[in-house]
Length: 322
Image (cartoon, rainbow, N blue to C red; front, side):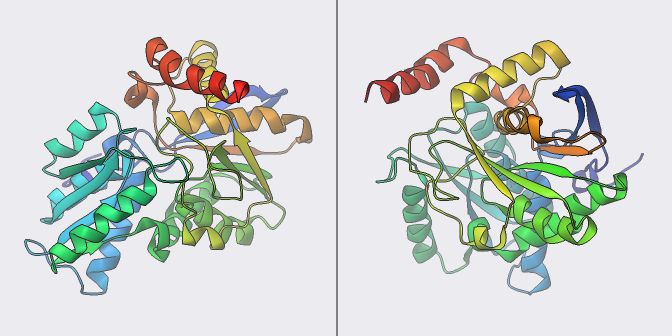
């Protein structure tokens, strides 16, 4: 395999068969973490930028791209913008890891960190305030707005969903983590056409408001929201499962031990949801789950005992006492 651009480094058909994971059922884990910049979000990044280019509203060396991200999309956009000649500003928050922030900066991005939480307990409202100020200050800037951009759904309908359809004759269950709901929306849109009887399970952390749950503090980035994304209106999962962050951490650790793979926080959350649903799987059914990234980005957080005790365990204790 010879490529001429890092934008070509997307690996579309890697599925890890987890034997017997769901009460004796094999689960096929679609691994997106081997893509360039380490996550599924590189597809989103390319799709959002190329949508602007098709519409003629972005010009290399002139347009400033702005986006809100807690990590993976920010890193992906940093690389894509550098490759295509755009300046990029990422507005993130204090949940972002130092490694993610440094990665964005190495690609040439400017990173602005929101330090204060909004009324709902999350940072998204504060990030949006900063973006509004940036847009007013520079008329050449464009906010991609992954939370209300149909291109976010389109890229995953055309790519991620079709990659699954190309691999499996039948899929009975699919588990998808919900953040902006771009991946989820694309999966719902396309795979319902391919597999009319498929059961789509949206997975989010407790404290996320996307599907009507109560707001709460969350510390694992990349999954869940404190402000409901408008494109969530186009996602129609059959089930919604909310997983607490303690369970996510336990799943990541046990999966590394039992299946010899370090997975990211979103993947741990998805795998916990698979376990919680496994009693409903029927013999012969095909179960697929999407793994957005790998665990190397979480060595200082999910896989760090001190961090877990300071944030996840302490937060759970505080909630139980309130």
